[in-house]
Amino acid sequence: MTLLRTVLLRLITTLITLLGVAVIVFVVIRVVPGNPIAMMLPPGATEADILRLETQYGFDKSIPQQFVIWLGGVMQGDFGMSISTRQPVSTLVLSRLPATLELSIVALLIAVIAGGTMALLGTRFRDTKTEGLVDVTAGMALSIPDFLWGLVLILLFGVLWPIFHISGRISPSLDIDFTTNFYLFEAILRLRFDVIADLIGHMFMPAVALAIPLAAIIAQLLKQSLKETMNLDYVTLARTKGYGEGKVITSEALPNAILPTLTLVGVQFTFLIGGTVIIERLFSYEGLGNMAIDAVINRDLPLIQGIVILFALLFTLINLAVDMLYVVLNPRLRHA
Amino acid sequence: MRDARAEVRRPIGLRLWLSGGWLSLLALAAIFAPLIAPHDPLAQDLFLGRLPPFWEDGTEPGYVLGTDSLGRDVLSRILYGARLALIVALVAGTLTCLIGATLGLVAGYYRGWCDRIISRFVDIWMAFPPVLFAILLIAVLGPGLISIIIAIVVIDWTRFARVIRAEAMSQGAMDYVASAQVAGRTQFGTMLTEILPNVLPTIVALLTLEMGIAVIVEAILSFVNLSISTDSPTWGGMIAEGRTSVHQAWWVLVFPLITLFLTVLSFSQLGEGLKDRFDPVLR
Image (cartoon, rainbow over all chains, first blue to last red):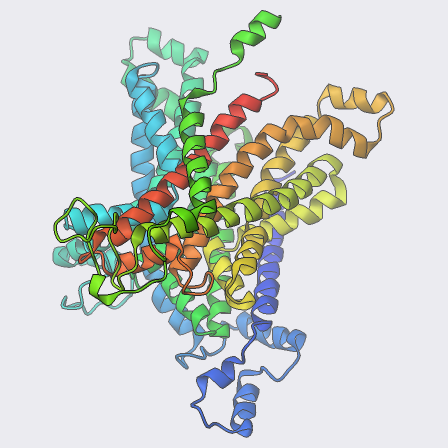
């Protein structure tokens, strides 16, 4: 099978998955009891008012008809109007997406650094107490989900030793006139260290909470594949050449052991992004997930739809990217 | 041979004792909550609001772990909260396991179009953020115990289906399965008598893990106030309240959090421990 064909096949399945997600969300939220239109009008609105708004939002048509109209809009980048804020869904969603992306990427970085360090330490000092410590820490970290770690962090660094902010994304008093909503990236580019410090102060706990389970998975899997690699002939050869144990691990074993971890990190990164929904709620962080929960509570159907589709798009794109990266990085597939 | 196997057989181990012990204690607390709870978990007394736990100053006898802002006893609420947590764990966990494992077994053993359909659904499910999906389902189904259970089953069946499918596939490729078929077993019979016993340890481990996850999902749903009716005590609801008043009354957050933490940890450790114990290779 050629590379091109693999890519095309993956693209088609990705599209089918996205379409499936769209259909399911569409059907599920349209069986919601309680008329969302009636809820947004002031009490005393007449039947005619309700009917007029229903027509405006297209709720008077059958579900398949609504789906076709909605899909047609999506193809042109139009996700409809939010019911609770009366703004275009695409505007709302795109204004919140940067916050969630920054949080997820920072969490991923923390997980990779912490998990990678643990794996390297565990391999360097294998069959000693250090490896045991790595195993126990990773096992514990993995057993507890991000939601609980978030609460533990709030108690530790919000109450017991209050050095981080426990809610929000940025201090309102801070003067920022940024052009994008990627506050952190833009602050880094503009070298605004006061803003960077404030953002990190807000982001630290939610990011660490999201990172802990992923760091544990990376530590376990990378250590396992490193240890398997350490017994291979070429590693022994490097050792006989007089390389130190640390160098053997990082420059000889690591490049070969990293591939399975990489694939796993891709899938796990989508789980991490899924975790932002509740973590953002917990830390009142103004991201997509927090907006999603509000949208569900307000029964804002077009907004819920838009957010779920965006999450699904993000997840499938990440999986696609990881699959492609795997093909590029795997020496056995490179010349196929 | 027999001696070697006996040597491999491990003792029950501290991990199983501790996690099993905590969960049994919790089960007893849940069953006998009306007998052992010192107070009515719903009784409010604004004069007894935010009493600290017993070792601090300004406590009132009888309120061992303090009270929340409405003067409700924290210990009694934790004990009653255990009822909902454990019912959800047992019922939702078992149902998810039955449905997910069955679909995984069928997909992995029969392959073909069955597998294609089930795997396509798993792919679609994997593209949903699970917490958001759960919240959405509760919003649709309306709050309540049945809704929570349905939401957990609908969201988490893929967890079993994915793993069991892969295991059933690798077992199905082995010689012993082929020889069972040569010996005249039907496909269905082979699946039940040859494949199922070999994937059972994984199912058991996943099941206990799933029970812990169900407890967390219930806590998350009650944290965003979408679980059951607001006046029943839930750990998640207590945590939500504790989160908002954490600077005034840390104990309202800490005690339900510790309980939830130990419960989830116990379920996952129990799963790991049982997996080792029931592994047919080690048995």
